[in-house]
Image 1 (cartoon, rainbow, N blue to C red):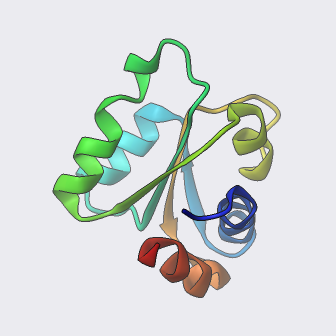
Image 2: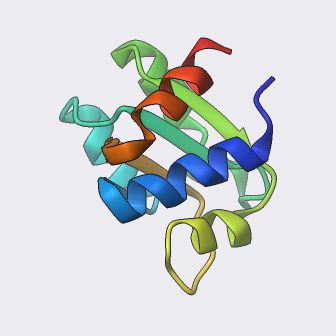
Length: 105
């Protein structure tokens, strides 16, 4: 299991040096287009049906999908003022090695 801090850090680095898609709709689109390198989903999304399809789609596309406890923290890591249920990292930037490490676990 990957520490949540590492996941948030990867999101923050990718936000600064790469590219993110924020929100479940954008995350879904990034996965469908084959752009996503890493999917991060918040466990506290309500109702859970909102993000339920993402792990299956990620698995289908061969993309690592990880969970973090808080949509508030995920939104903050992604640089937005509102909670977000999921994000997709589409360009890793300087987070490439960190994402590789997360994907291995």
